[in-house]
Image (cartoon, rainbow, N blue to C red):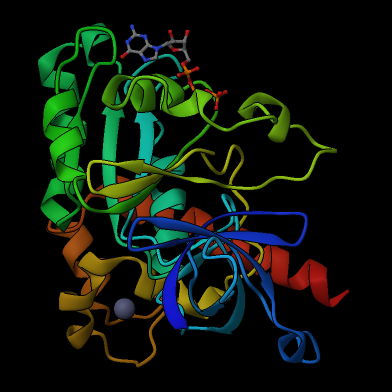
Length: 295
Ligand SMILES: Nc1nc2c(ncn2[C@@H]2O[C@H](COP(=O)(O)OP(=O)(O)OP(=O)(O)O)[C@@H](O)[C@H]2O)c(=O)[nH]1
Ligand SMILES: [Zn+2]
């Protein structure tokens, strides 16, 4: 029987595929190995179920990916929850913007979660949230300690395949445990702490959650943007789009050009100063990376 399903876990050449609620342990069919293939958690696959053993099968094809993230390694996310603390560690607009760019570049839909609301004044958190809501990024303010915002976040993730990402210490694990107690402890023989170590193989598992799935390995402790070309950066700032028509040059780097709609928008406060500052700083970083790689 030929069917299709979702890879929820891969380990040592075995792929665990959820086929409408039935878990089938699969290997990859020989003909696929002759070509290079990339297969990871989150991939949708076609498979042939073993006629003698209904819980075993062979993967025969990988369906086209909608998106792909490297850390955590997962394909076809419906949502990436970019998690950042309001304090402890202090909120950084630059780190927030770098993570949003990673998601934009990977075409993964994002949702911003600001944690540790219990440690901040309302005015402060609303000021930060407003910057991102204005751009159109859905932003949740939560506290895993008091439970503020947790029910709304849980509801939002219903039926979705979601991963959490963000720097170390911002409260990703606490948030995951608040929305689904025990979610980080169901990973079997390898604990998430060990799998995050440097010399052990990292693998991501999708845990069933509210009609969808949660990835059990939070991603990107430190933010790497090695694969992004400087020229691709403006497109990662969705709020620039509406102002680019007024740029004299196309493409425009929105830096030294004399007539630039984006720079005008920054002057008129229609683009947040923090976002433009992040743009300039990241652009420099990408150019330096590129120059270094050429040498
Ligand atoms: N006051 C307060 N503290 C929190 C909250 N969420 C997390 N913390 C604390 O912040 C620290 C880090 O939380 P974790 O959930 O381990 O953070 P993480 O992002 O998973 O960190 P890594 O495992 O290093 O990636 C812990 O001491 C938590 O108790 C919160 O909403 N309020
Ligand atoms: Zn411009």
